[in-house]
Image (cartoon, rainbow, N blue to C red; front, side, top):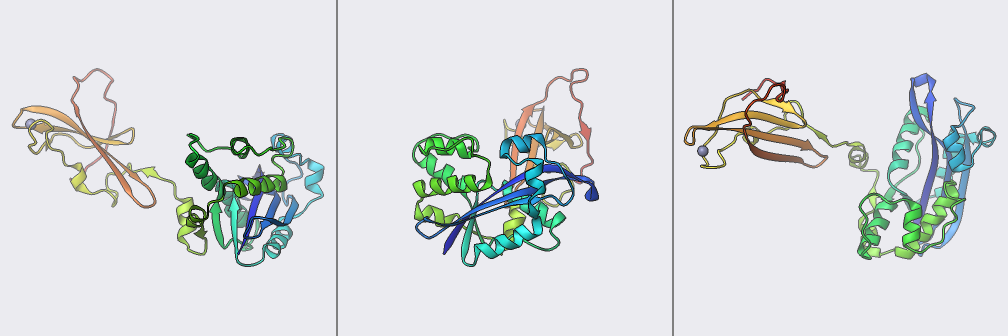
Length: 297
Ligand SMILES: [Zn+2]
């Protein structure tokens, strides 16, 4: 088993043939490690765009890749073929966060006619390192950058070389060597040949706004009075407001009105249902602007 740390530099560019923007891959950097995380080899290719002669100012400042460097690069297809040859077989590929994977998917689809980056097994290195840093007792709230992680792990990073694909992958390798933990590392390795891997990756959680959605269980839309427990009688249509379905209910026993609210968030694996009961406020002018939806109930 060998390990590949892959790092891409991409520029957000307008692709005229598709009339949309794409995070165009302009540099591929990678390092190959043996099972003891010793460096065996490195890979670097700068890519010549097939549709633009210019890189953005931001990209150029960040990566040091100028228009001239980009134009003297090789075609993406050539670079990917060379990379695939270089990585060999029986490897785990790692990237710092999954954002490079999204760029890979997009480039494969729009620029690479069926040619794919060779990735058999995959591990999100950012996720692994963050977890290890947390285990050391350091609090992390949002996703950390490579530089922050290096600082926390007391690995000296040359800030001027950051955002060069090869340098970033070498820095990743140093971080990994510093906090490798076999069991937790192996548990995070994913098999990309399983179609679920990309489905899960590309799935964006969303709130259901269509009351007729097959994901909604109607039982979740029944409300009992929160004072006496009797079944509430729904007195209004369901309205959808800020991710919540809202309806007015009436409890006969208490002779009171209340508002029942329920939201449904669809994630790849689950449906997260939240419910609450609110007192009905006296209606004030313009306060209750809601969208009416028809209810199948
Ligand atoms: Zn009641």
